[in-house]
Length: 177
Image: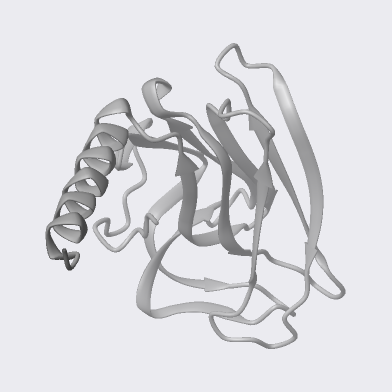
């Protein structure tokens, strides 16, 4: 899970590494934002930094996250909310493969009447480990806790196998004769 607590009002240049082999691009946007007024959906901020689309003059934009090509996830998402004057806020979530082809696109609505740091977790899941980029687009979108499930590297499998063999050897040694 990636949060944006290590950033403090970062507005570029993009792309920028945000951790765990993931880079972020915001157009326009801020990583490490500390306050956002989301109209009828309430407010975000005060105590936890987050990623936000928009600035004082442009509110509609996107946040994109590119994943390490050596360990692409099959699912990715984030805790999100967006600006709305009334009714649900509309956010588009898109996943792209390594060649830029669209894997999946979802239109989601978030309603958190007068909420504070309220939202919902939304994401996309693919049958294959092929999500190279995840993009959130909407009117003053805010998000935090970007989560994804990358394919384990071969060294992870080797370490797990070694651990299982060690446990088997210990169990075998402890068996009564």
